[in-house]
Length: 328
Ligand SMILES: Cc1cc2nc3c(=O)[nH]c(=O)nc-3n(C[C@H](O)[C@H](O)[C@H](O)COP(=O)(O)OP(=O)(O)OC[C@H]3O[C@@H](n4cnc5c(N)ncnc54)[C@H](O)[C@@H]3O)c2cc1C
Image (cartoon, rainbow, N blue to C red; front, side, top):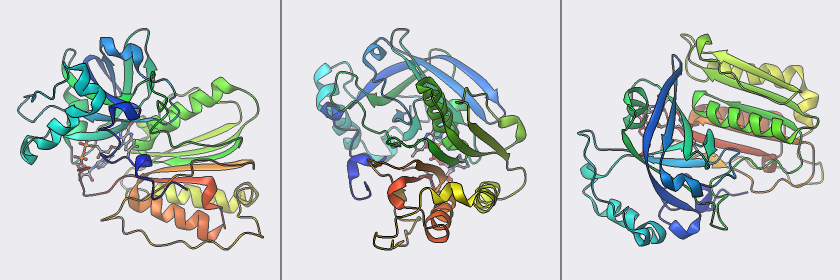
């Protein structure tokens, strides 16, 4: 279980470490295509993407954004040494708080090193934050820094939390912020081929926000329009109905009887990150991956672990964002 391992968390600790797998890439917007009312697709480009890591699944990245007035401070990105040692990040930290470029966490939707293109799907949400705003307004040629994996590093797989081991019976659940990761995961599993039993639930703002995805055969993918309901209601309802109707499926992930009963400590989601992602799932058919608004993930965690006895070592529970709070 990776809970206390800060290198597994989407905080700032890992991004400084150029030699730890992540490094900054100075990129520009090649295209900004509106996919649906609440998703836009940024295709970013830059020569250094030729070394961008391709480990993927749900690999996270950081977007470093321009200041609200459009300015950029010199973070030393012309200096390979500053990139490699993480000195660029020290420069960022040394800026006055109101001068620090906003940093937000996103997912690699696709990466094409040969074409020097990185694709990021951005949710357009209200209230908007700097990243969502950038997604809404970005024009070809606009600049952005992306902190992402370096294929030349032995740690290039840093920031991946989807670790199914050999499991092929999968439960995936999330809100729209998790949709890029869920789509990326499904597409990569389809490339692996073979038999899958996958139940995927994705809550999105409206029915028009359902995305097209090449999922493996054996996938039941449910897009759940929120409409006027509270965030997470539709997702919790759908997952709860599924676990009731197909209890044998989640029973595949039950904690073995000989193991100590699980304690489910409370996480104060207004102060602490809800982030439990097993680094290795050993044996067994079942694995679950749950991400989205922290309060919703917390409820799903309680439901699966407490109500269904699912082994916490077989589920990644990730609070991607918290209602009412900017990322930093
Ligand atoms: C590992 C990881 C991967 C992620 N991948 C993606 C991704 O690929 N695409 C993506 O769009 N998001 C993704 N997210 C979520 C994204 O980081 C957050 O939504 C982030 O807060 C957006 O930054 P912002 O600058 O737009 O808003 P912020 O400045 O962080 O927040 C401003 C306000 O908006 C609210 N808010 C933030 N997100 C939402 C939302 N989705 N709906 C409603 N209100 C919201 C906040 O609570 C706050 O009140 C990911 C998060 C993590 C941890």
